Image (cartoon, rainbow, N blue to C red; front, side, top):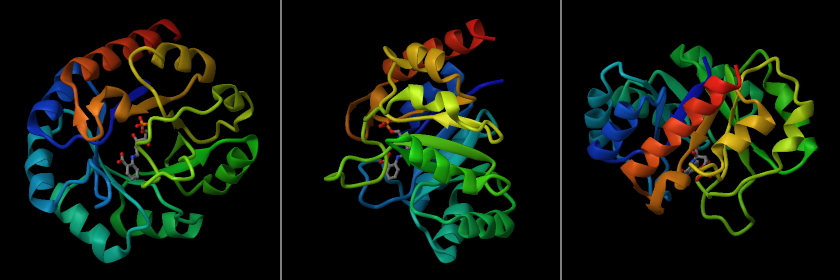
Length: 217
Ligand SMILES: O=C(O)c1ccccc1NCC(=O)[C@H](O)[C@H](O)COP(=O)(O)O
């Protein structure tokens, strides 16, 4: 079944909206420069709230082992999303250390970026194909930018991939139709402003993505 992930949740109410709407994965950002960053105490609280209703994903950016140890201890995630410049060797080391599925994020703006993704075959469990951040962006994700989905027609589908970058309730059906992903991921497209999720937008996104995946089976 294709997966729907809501990323950057940081309050009990919006987490509840994502869980009640039927999101398969909920993402928590551990990156201090992000408006969606959460600390360890809140991570433990939100993690307990999930209580098996969805897979918890911990997002980090070029984190070292000490940082990942602390994140894993606080959230008890079901998967790790590596959203920095982690090499295939680093991804393999993280997978071996924690024994958790790894989603490796790849910034895409051209076909060449997809060729680079091939290096993660046999190492990562999933690719998360996100738009490359704008040059002046303060962080590598959550920027609300799309990329040319038709690039994915030639993607090697050995690894499942999650489509990300600038998705929202209005464009997710078209994005799924064009790119036929194994999952979709959204953050700013279900927000009112950076870091402030909107429960109605979360529900609309999950409903439209689910309907679109169901009708394309
Ligand atoms: O969301 C953030 O603030 C963030 C910060 C640092 C690295 C990655 C970050 N987000 C990554 C995500 O998984 C987002 O869901 C993905 O980039 C899509 O974001 P958006 O275009 O806003 O839907």
